[in-house]
Length: 137
Image (cartoon, rainbow, N blue to C red):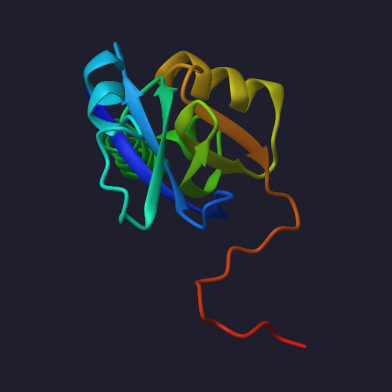
């Protein structure tokens, strides 16, 4: 199953832009399709097939689920301040920012949502800032 594409902003020796292609499960068919012999020699892109534990859509679903349960999680002691999705070498991962980041809060999140596709980060002192917003001096 197709997991997603990521533009790496890296170039091959031939000057092609490298695109990471994440595949959940058996990558054989996608590897054959994206093999250098299958891609036009005039293409600006070179594709690198990488295994992924989940698709971007699955990561987004998990992120939305965590976001929708913030109030319940806070009442239980897991104060989620922010969530996001980061593309790691093994595919998309949901980032969960906690403050305070306690063992009990982490255990609650791991028990409720699993650990395979989630990264928990201590956000004490970190303020999320929207993109294109200048930092305050």
